[in-house]
Amino acid sequence: MPDHIQFPLEPLEAFDMFLKEPSNGPARQRVISSLAATGGQDVKRETWSISGKLFTDEVSHQINWKGVHNKKPFSRMPTKTLPFSAVRKNTVTRSATDAEVTRHAVRWSNPATDRAARRRVPPPSTR
Image 1 (cartoon, one colour):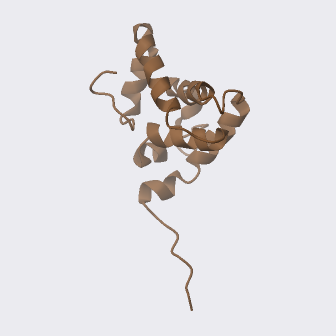
Image 2: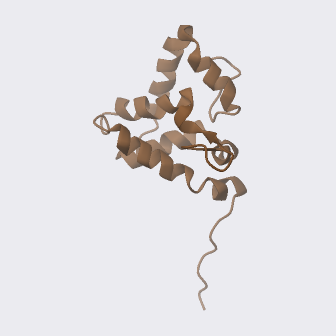
Image 3: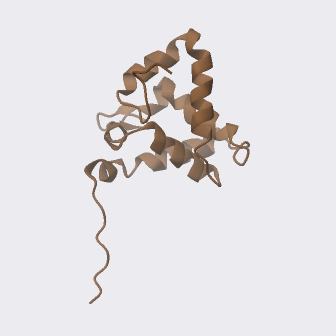
């Protein structure tokens, strides 16, 4: 990995350019192995763990799967391939389908606004 690209990713565009370069294939495989090592007992936890490692809260607020509401479409970015490959590299989630990973990636991005704003639901009143 080049020194200027570290996890979580920011800016995302620089990493996408890095992934497009065919000569970076071995580095791409190291990234996938690193992401797969984040662990997860099922497809959802593995996908969410990988997504959390890939993106800062601020970046996750700027993207969504389809690119609606003036956000960048993650489904069309080269970075999109990483969660699919990393989830399948984990022995527990090796048989995950594209649909499963996509569903959990989409669901992970839904509360991005709350993560980016660092909003938390207050605990219920004890009265």
